[in-house]
Image (spheres, one colour):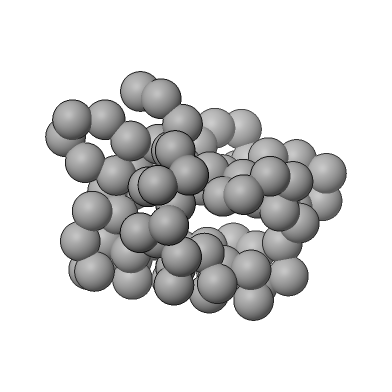
Length: 83
């Protein structure tokens, strides 16, 4: 699964704005760090758009389907709780 392209990130710009408001460090567009560690980034593949966010124990990432508005809302809720 490849990282999201600029065109894909354009589609997610409202979500990116909400994530930026959490105070995370955006090292490159759509790639966010928290306390010096990768925290959240986006992927695209033929099945849709996905985001990986660091899990609660900080060891791995949890994947969210952000193709739909409901998926984006779920991701944002989790990112807020973990940021």
